[in-house]
Length: 134
Image (tube, rainbow, N blue to C red; front, side):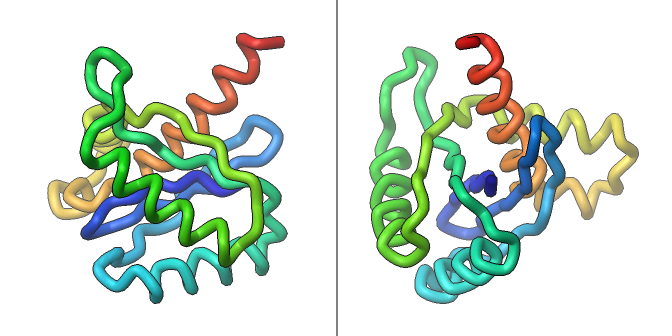
């Protein structure tokens, strides 16, 4: 599966398979068509069967203005990749990603672009929620 942390400036990607998660890359999001093309290529080349997308929710688990932008992006992406999409709350993933980067010894410069780490956390949350259901 492919985890996606969509943002209007950058989008982070992470792979997930059999409960294991690996941050992949950060892609510039300013041109939505280029972004969708790059994600589509990754989906095809890596035989991705499902997309897990972070959904920005507030403290009360209610959708935000950014949630609507994410849903709009996902609608366009689904038309292109034709794969199932599941949403996972991304609340707090940026903070968690920065803390993880600090613990891992990332330099200040490398910590400024941590969207792929947030995408990895989104996939971990998906696996964790799936485990709790079983």
